Image 1 (tube, helix red, strand yellow):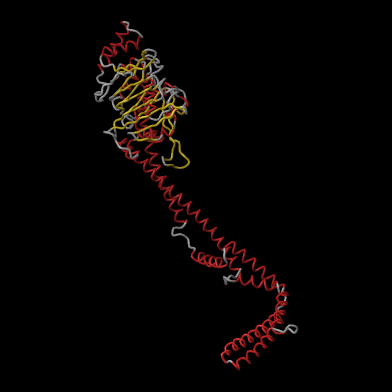
Image 2 (cartoon, rainbow, N blue to C red):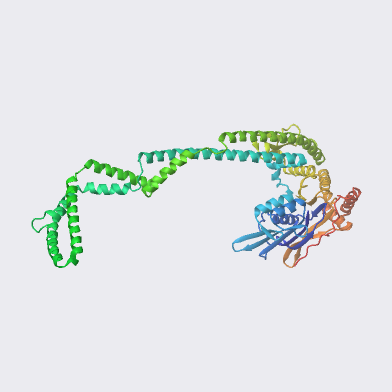
Length: 581
C-alpha cells in the first residue's frame, strides 16, 4: 500500500506531500487541473518514462519519493537484493536532473541505487496503473496466463512450480546430452587425429634422439667425398710420404736420433725422448688411418639423396611435433598411451538419452496436470467474470478462456492462454485485444481485478478516468465496483463522475493556482460534508445551482446509507494540502 508521496519540482507541482490510507481515494478537479500529474509522478518514481518536460520550468532538478508499507513479498524482494528495510517501509525515490547533455535520472530503493530491471520487477508488487488506451497488458497472452494461474490459487501455483522444476530438469538433461554428444564427437575426431599422427610418427621409425645430428654429419661427408679424399692424401703425404721437404715422420726421426745421442750424456732427458717416440708412433698411426680413410671414401649419390630425404622428413616432424626430435619421439609415446587409455566416460550416451526421455515424460505428465487445473479454473473465471461484467452494461457479453496447445511443453506448461471476447450478441469470440473498445477494455479490467482481488499481490490499484465516456448508469456500476475493490486494495481513481466521487473513502480536489506569474498545482483533502457536497455539485452541474447542490446531497445520502466504502482502516495519516515554496 502506498503510504505517502512527496513531489518536488515535477511538471506544474513545486512541492507536494500527500499521506494516504486504505480504501478508495478519488481525485477530482477541472480538466487540465493536474490530476494526471499525480499519477504520472507515481508512474515515474517506479521507473516509468518521464513526459516531455518533467522538471518544473526554471528548475534543473526534480525529486519524487513514494513510501510503501512493507509486505512479506516486498520483504523477500529486499532480502534478495541485499537492501535493508527502513522501519517496516519501502521507499522508492527518483531524482531527475536536467543538464547540458539532456535529462538524467537516478532511482533508489531505501537509499540504495537500483537499475531499471530491478525497479520493473519491484513495480509488479507495488502499483498497477490503468487508463483508457493503456490496457496493453490485457492483450498479452503471457499476462493472461499469469492472471488465470493466480486466479487458480495455491494448488495451481504449486502445480505450475512443479512444471517449472520438471522443465528445468528436462532442459538440464537435454543440455547434458548435447554436451556429451558434442564431447563424443570431439573425442572421436581427436581419436582420428591421434591415430593419423601416430601412424605418421610410427612410419618414420623414430628411435634415436640424435639421429638428425648424425644424419646431418653423414650428409656433409657424402657431399664432400672428393674434397675429403684430396685432403686426406695431402695430410698423409705431409706426415709420412713427402720427398721434397721431408715428411713429418722423417723430421721427427731425425729429432729422435739427436735426442738419443743427448741422452747418452744426460740421462735426465730420457722422459723427453720417450714422449718424442710416442709422438712419432701417433703420427705414423694417423698417417696409416688417413691412408685407409682416403682409400675407403667412395661417392654414393643414392645414399646422399636418401640421407637428404630422411633429414627433410625428420625436420618436418620436428616442426609439427617438436621442436626437437626428442620431443617428437616423446609425443609419439604419449599418443600410444592416450589411444591405449581412451575409454568412454562413465555415463554413456545411451544413459543420458534414456534420462532425457524419462524427464520429458515427467514434464508431459506435470504439464497435463497443470492443463487440467487451468481448464477447471478457466470455467470458474469465465462464470465469475461474466457476472462481474453484467452490472457494467455488458449483460450479454460472452467471454472464454482458450487454452491453445503448444508444440511442446515449456516452463509455464503445454498451452498458451488466450482471453476471447464478444461484447455483442451474434458476433464471434475473438482475442480480447482485437475486439474490445477502450471503454470495454477498461470495464473488463475492472471486472478482472474484482475477480482477482483476493489473490492479487499488488497493493495499490490506480485508475485514470476509467469512467470516461460512459453513461450515468454505468458510472454508478463502476463506482460500486471501485468501492468493492477498495475493500481489499488501496484504490486511487481520477474521475469526473460525481457518482464515483460520492462513494470515495478519501476525496481530494486538485486545482491550479497562479501566484504572481507562476502556475502551480495544489491538492486539498475534502474532509467535511460541505466541502464534498460543493465539489460534487460542481462535478454535476459546473456551478453551485440549487439543483446541483440537491443532487450532490442525494449522492452523499446514498453513499452514507450504503455504509463505509470498505473495511479499510481509517486514514489516520491525514492528507496534507500541497504547499508552495
